[in-house]
Length: 303
Image (cartoon, rainbow, N blue to C red; front, side, top):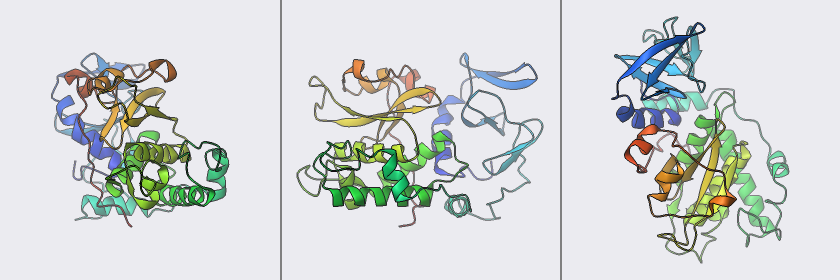
């Protein structure tokens, strides 16, 4: 493919699919639609390179054909036609140029601060034990709302699907927030620390990420480690994408992994309190039984 990414989500797909596509697969047709089976399962949710050509598989596993996907046209045979540039790609553009062109389209996610706060009124009201930070006062929660609204309306577009939105928000957070030397200063264990002050510990990362997910309606849980964990003070998130649940650890840089894979890092949690995560989004994590850190580029961030 001439350019390997359009928006940051494809960085995930292309980075992790390198190992995945090394396994043999086969095409199959069902009711007039094409699928590609690999390791006993249909490819889905993204671009895959097969026999030197790029194809896009929808979350149902169906191969896209004779349509424009994320700005790239795929022909009737499903293959990306390299001679047709995307509507936001110019000859000679870098990957960062393409992302910025995409984000500058007139399709920004529309959300006011008032609408954002109305989605989760108790979380944005001081004195209610807000999941974004129990100790935050109203002024600080207002700042969190303003920052979340700015991020969402600056970097999320209406035509992104949930995995693209999630990847964009994950990429933004880990590229703008630094690990705080202590939890006791600058609200480092809150969403304010992660998003406004841009310095946080794991709790702040997890609370900040939940605030971002809540804003774009991606189901997200804030999770605290159990006492018998390798690190009993650690916090992270469990999110839902395509009807399935996965672990996301923005401070640890683990993206969409299963219960077993995340447990292999030494973490334990109250599994009765959260949805089960039976498989990783990228099969290579389950095949190897380990979580691979994911550090996407942040060069596209305009602030």
